[in-house]
Length: 368
Ligand SMILES: [Fe+2]
Image (tube, rainbow, N blue to C red; front, side):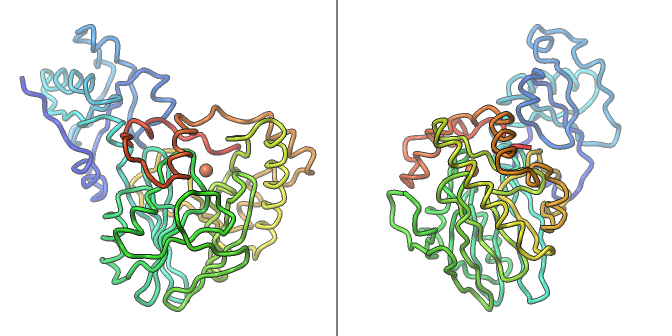
């Protein structure tokens, strides 16, 4: 029996159209806990399937009118699962390339502000990586590009925008920034806070300096802590792009790429930066660079007003000493390959690396 397969692109299109899809994840539980497809169903059938056990999926109730897709780490065991379901009369597909390929699936959500500025949140569904294209009056900027430049060029084109500036909130350690590539592909100016220690050319913007596009401005606010160059981009009085400094329900970890003493200095800086951000207008929308969960194809924006974020994150109400204590007790495991990825992002080139291998795995950016 031939295996029926479905590509990431095909599955993404079905989910974008809100078709009824039943996604069955057959990986071992520890892999599932690391990262997953949102709204998928899990059965730890990995060993049974590989042992040829025909009862491996008997516990699964497959809905009648749904497209059934099986998924594993790289698309091999999921073929066994789809074939088993086919033998039982269910026309199931196996997701080609598994989670490693699904890492590049994406969807969007959008928010429009009263002055005609539209923000499209471009979300990598598996790892919860958020990038943005912000447009008004024919011009746009792209923040924290993490996908092929073509994705952003198409979104700009669909909205009648020319990309004028591209920029990162910081030197990322959990995915390879595509900002430089996008600058080359679009002709946009690559800007960054002027203290960023990278080895490629960019136009430096000082703390509290700004860039203009269409009829709007973005101000650069230096908010060190997660990394020393971490910057928050403030879009008028509408929104702040907080990178990995402040999430909607947690804060960015300050401990990566630092020894114990530097980790404490970074945590102190983070505390100050968070205070600064939370003193902004209560109704400004916080748009972060990450969310902790896999993202559904629900087009619901991941963003909250400053006042809501303030009430949600208890640790930001601690004293500095209590905050430092809390942060040091809660650091999650480091993201896979973070030193290699940070070096790539400093050098501005990933030549010789396979992104799908480097970036595979879950997200470990936040301290909740
Ligand atoms: Fe980060």
